[in-house]
Length: 97
Ligand SMILES: C[C@H](O)[C@H](O)[C@H]1CNC2=NC(N)=NC(=O)C2=N1
Image 1 (cartoon, rainbow, N blue to C red):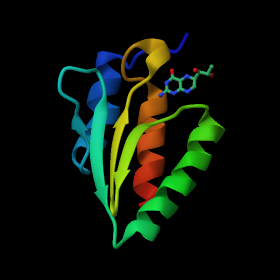
Image 2: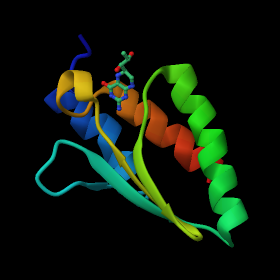
Image 3: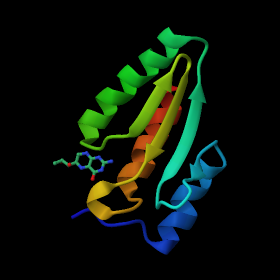
Image 4: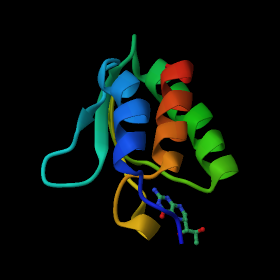
C-alpha cells in the first residue's frame, strides 16, 4: 500500500510544484496542470517521454490531449490521494516540458 503524503510532506514537497503551475484539483486529493506546447507534435512528444517515466515508476497520470494542450491530473489510486509518487512524476513532467 502506498502512503499518502504527510502534512509536513505536503508543505515541503507540494509547495514548489504549486509555485510552478500545478494546482490542487477541485474536490480531489490530486494535483493538476495544463501544459501548452508549440504544436501537436511537441505535445505528443512530451506525452511519449512522460509515458516512459510513468512506466518506469509504475505510476500513471490521468491526462488528456487536445492539439497542443495536455491536461494532467496526478493522484495515487492505491493511496486514494497524493503520495510521493505524484510529486516525483510531477517533477519529471516539469523537467520534460
Ligand atoms: C497494479 C499496478 O501496479 C497499480 O495499479 C499501479 C499502476 N499505476 C498507478 N498510477 C497511479 N496514478 N496510481 C496508482 O495507484 C497506480 N497503481
